[in-house]
Image (cartoon, rainbow, N blue to C red):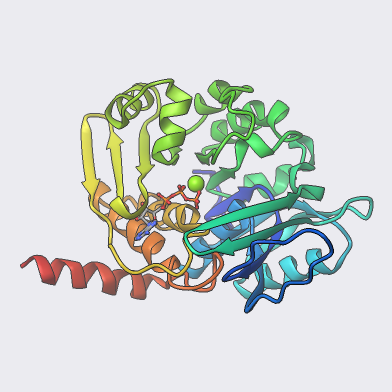
Length: 317
Ligand SMILES: Nc1ncnc2c1ncn2[C@@H]1O[C@H](COP(=O)(O)OP(=O)(O)OP(=O)(O)O)[C@@H](O)[C@H]1O
Ligand SMILES: [Mg+2]
C-alpha cells in the first residue's frame, strides 16, 4: 500500500459506453419495415463502468479512467458514475470521438449486439494521471482485448504501480479476435487477482477443462477466480481451492453479472476476508445483478448481498 493513506480503494481503467436494450422481441426485419418493440432501456453499459458502479454500490471508493466523446451519451455516463459517487477526474472528454454505444436486440432466449466502439478503446497508458494512480490502493482492468490503445503500455504501467504498493486485478472478457494473446501474458505477470469466466480461462490457457485452466493460471497468478454463470464460481489461492455453487434464481437479464461478481469478490479480497466469504459475496452480487434489465439497476448494497448469503446459510442448516 502507498505510504500515505490512499484516497481511492480502486481505480478502474476501461471502456465507457451506453447500452440501448430493445426487447422483448427485437429481431429486426429489413426491407424498410418498421417494427414496434415493447421495451427500450438506455442504461450504463461497458464492463469497466458496470464493475465500477457495482463496487461503489458496495461502499468502495472508486475512481474511473476512460474516454468519452463530448456528447449526450458521454454526459449520460458521467452523470450515472457521479450518482454513485465515482470520481471521474481521470475521464478524458475527446470532442473528436463519439461515446461508445451498444444496441442490444433481445429475443426470447437469445440476443444480438451491435457495437460502435467510438471512444471505447481510445485510452492510452500515458493518459493515466500518475498522481491519480498514486492515490489508489488497487487498479482494476477490464475488457483487455477491446483496449487496443491501452494494451501497448499497460504492463509497464502496472509494474510501476505495483512497485508503489498497489495491487492489480484483471477481467479480460472475451477476445473478439480469438487470438487470446496480444501481450496478455506480460499483463498477467503483473496481476494479483485474475477474474475470467470458464470459457475465457480455457481459451487463454489453451486447455480443455476448468480444472486444467485453474491450475495453469494459479501456477503464476496469486489469486484466480473463475466464473461459471448460474453454477457459481471457483477460486484458487496457492493450494487453497474453494467452490461456490452460486445462488440459482429466475433471471431477468445477465448483462454484466461477471462485472458485478468482480466488484463483490474484490470487496472481500481488499478487506482480506476468508476466500470462501469473498467468493460468496462475488456470487451473491452477480446473481442479484440479474434481477433487472441492464448491468447496474439491480446491483446490491453490501447489506442486500449479505442477506442473500445468510438466507442460503439458513437453508443449509
Ligand atoms: N443465471 C444466473 N443465475 C444466478 N446467478 C448467476 C447467473 N448468471 C451469472 N450469475 C452469477 O454471476 C456470476 C458471474 O456471471 P458469469 O459467470 O456469467 O460471468 P461472465 O461470463 O464474466 O459475465 P459477463 O457477461 O458479465 O462478462 C456467476 O459466478 C454467478 O454467481
Ligand atoms: Mg465477463
